[in-house]
Structure formats: C-alpha cells, structure tokens
Length: 254
Ligand SMILES: Nc1ncnc2c1ncn2[C@@H]1O[C@H](COP(=O)(O)OP(=O)(O)OP(=O)(O)O)[C@@H](O)[C@H]1O
Ligand SMILES: [Mg+2]
Image (tube, rainbow, N blue to C red):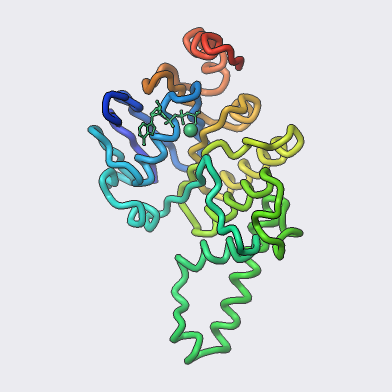
C-alpha cells in the first residue's frame, strides 16, 4: 500500500512548479511535505490525486501506475484529500456534508430504498452514526445540525477532514489542516492525526505549522522552488542547514 512518486515534473508554461521530485510514502505513516510558499506542495497533491497530469515522471500506488488516471478513478483506489481552500456544500448542514461524501461510496440506491425500506432505513441510521462518530473524532459533533458555513473557519476545515475520511480512504492528503486554528486547536488536531494514523490510514500532510509537523511526522520531505532539498526524520530535517537556509532565506523560522 505504498505511494511512490518518481521523477515528477509539473510545468505550467514557463513555471516549473515541481522539478524532478521523487518521494516514497510508507504505509501507516505520517509523511510531511513542507517548504516555503510556492515551492510546489499543493501541485504535488494535485498530481497525486489526479487533478493534473504530470509533464513527466510517474506516481504509483501499490505498484500500479496511477498518474494520468482521472481523479475519480484515483479516489476509487482509496485516496481522499482536503483542499487548501474550503470546498464544503454551503447550504447543507455539517452532518449532510459528511453524509454526501459517504454517499458517493455506498451502494444504496433509490430502488433499494423503495423495495426494501426497512433495511435501507437501517443503513441510513448506521451511516448517520458513522458520520457523527467522524465528527466526534474532530470534536465537532455538537455542530452536526448547523449549517456548515455558519461554523468558524477552523471548524469548517475539520468538517472537510471528516468528509475526506468518510470515504474510508487508505491514504489521505491533508493540505494545511492547521490553517486558521489556534494553538490549543492545533494541539488537538495533532492528537486526531495520530489517531487516524494509528487506525491504519496513511497520511500525506502539507503544513506550515512546524510545531505540528515536527510533533507528529514519521518522515518529512522539504521542497524549495519545486525541488526536494532534504528528507528524513523530524530531528534530521530540522537540523539540516539547507532546510534552515531555505526558511531563513524567506524570513520564516522552523
Ligand atoms: N494551475 C496553475 N497554473 C499556473 N501556475 C501554477 C498553477 N498551480 C500552481 N502554479 C505555480 O506553481 C508554483 C507552486 O505552487 P503550489 O501551489 O504548488 O505551491 P505551494 O507550495 O502549495 O505554496 P503555498 O504554501 O503558498 O500553498 C507556484 O509558482 C504557482 O504559482
Ligand atoms: Mg499550497
């Protein structure tokens, strides 16, 4: 169940957003991807999840090449992701947002509901229970019946994460999940991410919050100007002079 990114290049006109990057994401681990703004992190997510076809290089999942496949086929293999910008259904409740995400992956059809209302009713109840459990995992079950967009931004990000997990993924890609969270909320998010990993789901994590990254990642890869400049465990990466330079050069600190 490993994810292998090999010599990936993604160009947009004259911009080389990702420049010959290879990454190996181990199953059951949290793999962090960090780097200054514009270094290519989200672009890698977009390629891996099938939103962009790479200029060259390949992505393989469990030994099967997935780069070039449409996003829905990649999702079906067990990928889920969140977006740096929120993509919730604005008029729906928090609960319905999660149920809709599940719905794309359950087999209950309208016909089943008509022909066998009792067992489909039971299934609905189970799905609702599962959705509430997921919201509980993120500490937002109390908001289940509220309109998603009436929640504070940090809560909405957590709804997005619950939606991603609702599809029962093997691997989940989170793009800056701590954006907009305060320190206490980020601490709780760390615990939640560890629980998700310990349940066997692989996490590929883009995040600017270094405390979060250094606290929970098993491996960290560092990008700068589309190139991988360092990789290793959190201790090695945070001490790597090349990494410190990349951040200090942009007036950010580790
Ligand atoms: N669809 C696109 N068309 C043109 N250029 C793009 C596109 N997507 C990304 N880029 C460019 O590719 C580079 C990498 O962008 P990317 O969004 O991957 O960075 P990032 O590391 O996620 O940055 P941030 O931390 O700010 O989210 C940037 O120069 C960006 O402007
Ligand atoms: Mg980004």
